[in-house]
Amino acid sequence: MTARIIDAHDVAFFDLDGVIYLGPIAVPGAVEGIRDVTASGARVMFVTNNAARSAAVVAEHLNSLGFVAGPDDLITSAQVAAGVLAETLTEGSLILVAGTQNLVDLLAEVGFRTTDSADDNPDAVVQGYSPNIPWALLDEAGIAVQRGATWYATNDDATRPTDRGLVAGLGAQLAVVGMTVRPRKPIVFGKPHAPMLDFAVSHTGAERPIFVGDRIDTDIMGANRAGMKSLLVFTGAHGKHDLLAAGPGDRPNYIGADLRALLEPARVATQEGHSWRCGAARAQLHDGRIQLDADLATQAGQLDALWALANLSWATDADPADSLAQLDQLH
Image 1 (cartoon, rainbow, N blue to C red):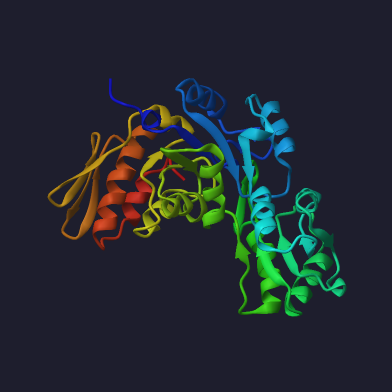
Image 2 (tube, one colour):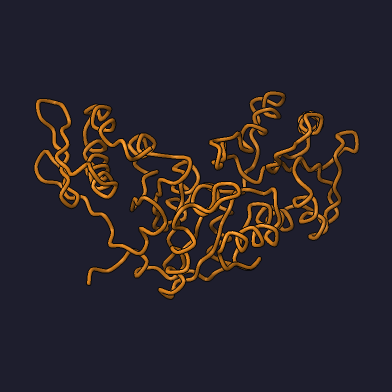
């Protein structure tokens, strides 16, 4: 039997939004997929850039959707931020928090004082995603940074996938503050920045980890920077166009329709002259144009074609637009 992707890994890290759930609903097949990954012997760990909710609350959400998870199965960017700042700032430092109560509580637990006013002369500003952030609090954060407070952010995701579509993420809230403090940038803890996945590896003792995500710019880039394998799934924010636009250091090792691809053999693309083949699909150059020869009636066939097309596109300067349009079962 051909080895499955998961068979080469001891820990599987999963992003949440767009991989495990879309707001209030589970991604189709995710519950069964996580169950089967656990049954394979690999440890499952959920790793999210979303700092809005506590690990306990997120675990309750997961259990309500049919997953089996506890707080120890989760790593949030808010936890990472609190842990790193506890080693960086002096205990008792005053921090202006532009985020949810979860972030306030975590920072207080590690010995910091918190405020929501720039007039208290905070030592630092920490921003974390909040779906109900008051505009006035963003003003206070900007003023505090202007006055010299060190600026931190749990993550910098531009968007969040939901069951209704994409919505603005913390990156948009950072941009509001950033408009007032140009050219300063925040120090960021979440993916793709090093603290998040360094913490995840240390926390789990992973030796052969793999990261499963739906975003090139956070999940896949973060995994590459951490030296771990990655699987890009097409259930969330990024799709076929994002894959082909990825630079040399930002590309996944594997692609799949959803996280259940971990339980299948890897798609492998091989070069044959001026063409690339994956399974029965072939992408080739003909008179400077890309042609696809594949079974496009199924999603699996389109994924094979996409992987062949991606490898050909990365190796040439040919325009893949017409070929991508044929892959109508992939977003």
